[in-house]
Image (tube, rainbow, N blue to C red; front, side, top):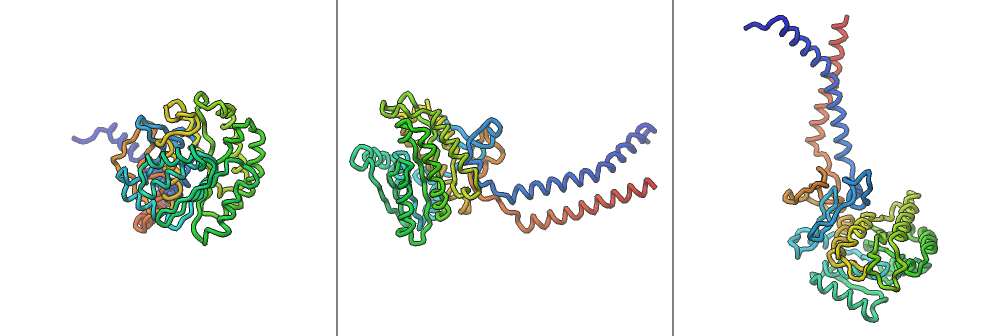
Length: 377
């Protein structure tokens, strides 16, 4: 049956509309190709893991605690480095990452917890032993002592420096001058709770400002310099001697530290994992601390895992996260990638195909424009 005049008219209009839209479709395709090429060749810089959550980027940064007591970032998957949990390949990657490396923990008892946890991870010691070791240190003459542990080719050191005074970084300077022997050095530094315990919030801010140039100088000489925010405490559980520590003072200090470090590009070598503040704040009220200041092993393990993902994943050939990892309502499409994994580079075949398609699209746009010009004449 032959089409009616009305049907022919509609077909002609549709054909003209499609032909008119063809140049715009090709142009849109070129724009999408360019956007995806930029996205694939740019690296996240660990922002999706290390930055804290705010109202504008709540689905991109930050994370949440699961009912099992595990930390889940909103935009990526944490890679476990504990082979006792079945991550043998990742455990081997950890040894490779920290091989011939000196990891220096500088600070108070929270830094000491991380020291003992990493020691257990590298030496296959049971987690309970790490907890016991830290408890023993806290209850004996080792409470305020420097500690050391050598595992495989990694050297771990803990320097008791809870204050931000003129000598707080002297152990690190001395180590770089006489002990490092050209080895890779990673510094994990936290301090300030002792000053807040004495009610010296204003003095603490001034002390950090005075130490900042020294920290910047040292950070330029090491592979990684991590300043850990104070995060939060569970105020109702604090011992009487610690009751001057408040979450409002902690938040103010952490925000001012980040603002000071962000003022100058020269300080960009100081990494502040602000997500730790989210982890502490969300851990309050979840029965993850008994004294209000020190959190349990699940927390310390998650904290160390975040730091190790930031240190090791950017320099290792990290595979895609397993598809068996479930998504949640807060995860995005990028959550299938391990945190801090370098962006996938375009393969030569992909680049060639994109170039051919782009050239064809440009030719098509030009010919379409030329034909329209001729039709108008």
